[in-house]
Length: 214
Image (cartoon, rainbow, N blue to C red; front, side, top):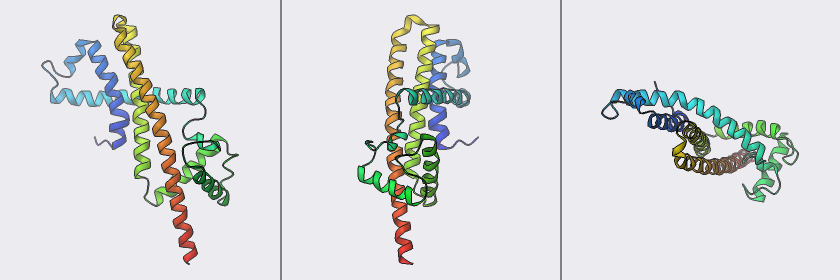
């Protein structure tokens, strides 16, 4: 089976957090990886288990993401709707607002979060057509990785509290690690949005210059 970069970083690694913590809590499961250490076959089992569990962990990550948006409004990508945002420079936001208005995408100050999501997809599609999404995709993958890791740490911490409460200090450390991962998740959400705006404006400038030269 061939995995792409996102499946390695965004699915397998968060799943590995849960699988590894479960093996440590239940020593009998270590035999699946090898009695005298991790064998080649055991490593394969570990990767497959991490991949499967990782999808479930990312489902939990989606829930955490939705809850986070509800508690800390607006989300990183939606923050650009506010004139007082700090993701990009005010002049860049003004240029974006003018460009979207000229293209009939609507007034940035009046877009709803739902409409803004559709506009972002259009922006990404145009940047992708210019083959300039490398950094944007990297930020998005890291965002997904941090979301998954946060969910994995939370799930591992909750398991320790339920199954081995005397080890609550470890659970507390995992909860703290999850919180730090959530902070990183929000940070890369901002990076993603800033890079998308910059590349979109650059693509628009190139397009406008090309049209004027004709």
